[in-house]
Each structure stands twice: as structure tokens, then as C-alpha cells.
Image (tube, one colour):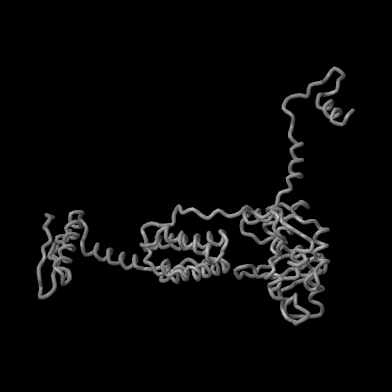
Amino acid sequence: MRYREPILRKRGKRWQIDYANPEGFRRQLAAGYSREGAERLRIKFISWLIDNKDPEIELIKERAGHRHQSVTIRELFPIFMDRHGRNRSKKMQVSYKNSFGNVCRCPQLTDAPLVQIDQGLVQDYLNARIRQDGVKPASANREKAFLSVLLKKAVTWGYLDINPLEGMESFREPRKRDVEITPEQAANLIEALPSTGVKSIVAFAIYTGLRLEAILDIQIEDIKIDEDISVSRAVVQYKGGDGVERILSKYATEIIKSSMGNRKSGHVFINPGTGKRYQGRMGSFDRAVKKLKLQAKDGSKLRFHDLRHVYGNWLHRAGVSLDELRVLYGHRDRATTDRYVTPDLNAISKKLSLQPRIGKEKASENGVSEAKNEEFSAAGL
């Protein structure tokens, strides 16, 4: 159809735009009470009509876009959890909620329209978390990842055109912690602890690689002991809330039996002084470590969490593969397992002797190969 330029008409106190849509039908749409505002809208109508677009439909799209762009992180989070979070594990759901709770402490970020969020604003928030709250770079990176996922979903659902955090650099995290103690050192550590209960918890941590809170949360009702093969199974609450069944070795099973005694319910490990579950802080462990001067390879003192490294290192040195350790740890990916295990470089270097020699060995005048002569020379023969 032939293009006809939209015109403004006033009806009472309100302005209207009179135009013909691309199909040739005459339309009259309200344009507000302001002559200037109506003229700006008329210019938009002209642009849409030149592109053969229906101004009525484009206006609906534009207004919907404006509503989306005014949405904040605080308003989007319930939608995010309903559409995305509910399909994630309980551990991830808890992580999302924790990160959102921390972000809510910064209203400049939480209550800003999504279109106003940029990398600078997020960087300022994360820097404040590190400086003021003392969080580690890993924690700051975890919150950045949460915000990035949320804003990526905002793009998918039409609230944003682009993810403003795409390409944003993460904080550099420290190198993985290398921890190596011998069975003799572990025995000395346990011997230095003041009570049987704490001794059992520390030994159990070494034999299972579990976090302290996970150990203290184990319930007798969740223990299944297989007497035929001297192992047991326990439902363990991992960080984040997922209950997962873990196979425990015969040594860990012996500790379970001893700690349970004749009890049929309640926590496996209870404080004999209170008859209740141990609290999370193990001050006697720290004192024993200080007394024995046990350290990680970087020179810092041994931590209770480091016993997870000891568990993995001992098994790996005994021949358990990293993929098998991933299953025993309960990790979803190998990268997490790799952070807990320190390769034995001496043992690995010996594998180099398996390399084949290129070409044939040259025989010396007495018929002995040059390689053998080198061995005799090294031995002083």
C-alpha cells in the first residue's frame, strides 16, 4: 500500500495518532496529554511504518521491554529459582541462596535495574567482600559465578539483551594446598589428643576424607554395617544439604562400632561430657598440631580440613586412581579431586626408566654396551 504519514489529532485533552497500518487499515491510538511526547511517539510510528512494521505491535513490544528492563536482581531471583534453581541439586540451590543473601547486603547492586548493572559495579561489590568481610578469592569467584548465571538467564528470558558480566575476569586463587603427613605422624597426632572421642573423630576423618561437620552429623540410623566384608555404609550430609551414601573402610567401620556402643539412635559421635553432638570447633586438635609442629608444605599449620588431603594422598600412593578417588570423595568432577591429591613426583619420575632407547646400543671393544659401561662407571667398577 502507499505510505501515508501519521498525523496528530487532539481529542479533548488527549492527543491521538492517526495512521494507516501496513495492511491499509486506519488506526487511531492514544498518545498522551503532552504535545511533545505525542510528537516523539509519532516519529517512532513513522520509522516503524517505513520498515513495514505495525506500530501497534511494536509499541506493545517496547513497553514490555521497558517493564523487563526495570526488573532488579531482588525481583528476578524468585523467578530464577523457580525456572532454573529448582532443577539443580540441593547443594547448588543452597549455594544460590547463600550468594543471593550476601548480594542483598549491597542494595546498590541488588536494587539496581538490570540494565544498569555492569562489571564495574560487580567488581566494587566483590572487592568490598574481600576487604571488609575477609572472604577468600574462591568465595568471591563463587558469587561472581552466581551473578553471571543469573544475568545469563535474564538474557535468555528477555530481560536483557546481553550479559554484562560476560568475559569478566575472576580473582586469582592461591595454588592448591599440598599436605603430606606420614602414618607415624598421624599416630602421634591422635596420641596427643586429650579424649577418646576426639581421637576417634580425627582418625575417622583420615580414614574417610569427610569434612568435620559431615562427620559430626552422621546418625546411627543411617549406618549399615556388612559384617561379612567388614565395611559399612553411611548416609553423609555433604556441604549444601545432599544426603549421599558413602562406603566406609574396615578401619572406619571399627571406629563407628566403637563410637556407637550399644546405642540405637542419635549421633554416632557424641561428647561424653554433655551427652550431645560435638560442636564444630576442635580446639584440642589445633593445640596438638601446634605442639607437634605439623605443617602443610607451604609452612602453614595443619588444619582439620587438611585431613581430606591426607585421605586422598595415602590412597593414591597405594595405587588408587584419581578417577576412583573422585568416586570415593563423592566429587562430581575430577578437577575437584585433583585439588586434594599431591602427585608423588619421585614415584612418577621412576616411570621415565620405561622409555625405550632410540636406535641400537653401541657395543664397546670388550663387547659390553656403552650403557652398561656407564652403569659400571657410576658404581665405581
